[in-house]
Length: 208
Ligand code: GAR
Image 1 (cartoon, rainbow, N blue to C red):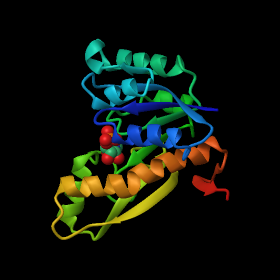
Image 2: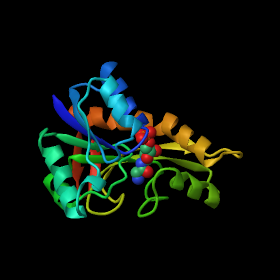
Image 3: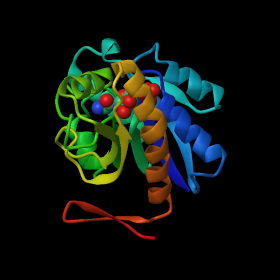
């Protein structure tokens, strides 16, 4: 049974998609052992509580400096000995020590087709604002492994979503979540939980 730890910062709709996929067996061989939020007010923490999952807040505001916050975060992760860490809308740059300790065991969902509209400054609604500014006709979402760069790790799954003429950033964000993120994030976890993913030369291969 894959022990999954989920890191969140906000609404937690991706967390909810994972919780639902576990309860309806779209994800098998996995359980969520903890949810960590950097934001005490995150609705995601309520979702964890409602599902009977251990949910805790590790806020930078409760630590004297960034180094101590990073230590606190890593301690809260290690306590649960997770096999997989899922960043589901986690708006914190991970400490390098955590990336090294959990190499190829951290995945992230990003609301665009990487390598478009990603990297520093591209997160949440901002991604969809930039997509609309540029006028692309197709966007989507990506699930990838996390390495030391920003959105640079091996890509696991991607799904395209159409941009429509009258889209606002909010409308587009919702469509990308519904049609892409909430599908491919649970799917990626299921693939990992069932040993169907390998990484060779920085590329992900999926066994049928
Ligand atoms: C999601 O759209 C996720 O892809 C994005 O934040 C949102 C969180 O929503 N993540 C990033 O932009 C990371 N670079 P949620 O809290 O409702 O799951």
